Length: 365
Image 1 (cartoon, rainbow, N blue to C red):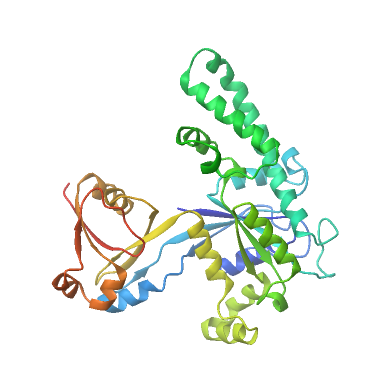
Image 2: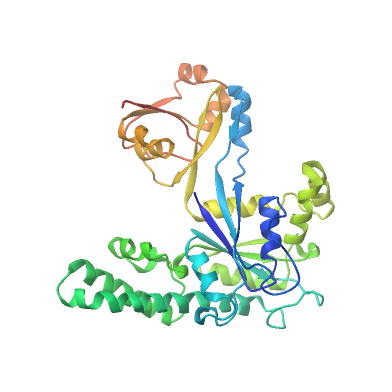
């Protein structure tokens, strides 16, 4: 299951955002640092309007969306890489996620304590990123020390890893924002990925604003957007407090309240979809009378491997895939009509599954 970690300095709205994302009150939220000690975990469905449309056409008894696991990780502070606050524990939690949502305070409120005593979103971001980089550097140095002897002895795998880690150490030491594909070849990436380094995980900066700045943002959010763009990251503007309150209003009440604020849609759906896109994931769909179900795979996945997402036997015994695009299915309104019109295709092992494909896999065990 995909995991996204919500991180940031203490008291910037992480737990409030978590409550809104998961539509629960499971994450405690209060106005003091280290309110969250143990990470809270919530399973969140990925919004996909296509599922209801297909379920109606297929008269499905159940709709099963794909999901993401969100982890509310306690606030980091300067010195966390050296164990300040509860740093070591928190850093371990971050290593275990696939993507990072860094919540950044972009609102003024004298009644809400800021751990640094002032609102400065870029300073906050750099504090977090520095601590992650320092912790990664320490981990890299330990790893290099263990493999240097093997590398000197002529071990080719150790020599490759040593070279990749030395390059990574130099980049982190220079404060370089790292995108693995920009700086490393495929062999080096294969060595680095298993290390679960935090500095190479994809990031979304969540600019947490007041309700008055939700529609157009403010000077703080502009700074965050510029920083994110220059570092190849994404930004989502959200009012975590408002999103948390929307949970209790129901769908109709939430839409009405957002309309009063001049906002068309909740920021939560955008946040979830952004995480999904950030990880280069797509959705393919199986649909029938029993259920309409979304399945997740990486962009570029071939049909047999996509079949394996459903069951390993499907991949092992893959014969072919019957594929219909979502658009064609909605226009034709049934499998029979799709086949009669010739828009349902038989695809083999080299077919790359596309987002929105409706697929029926044929296999033999």
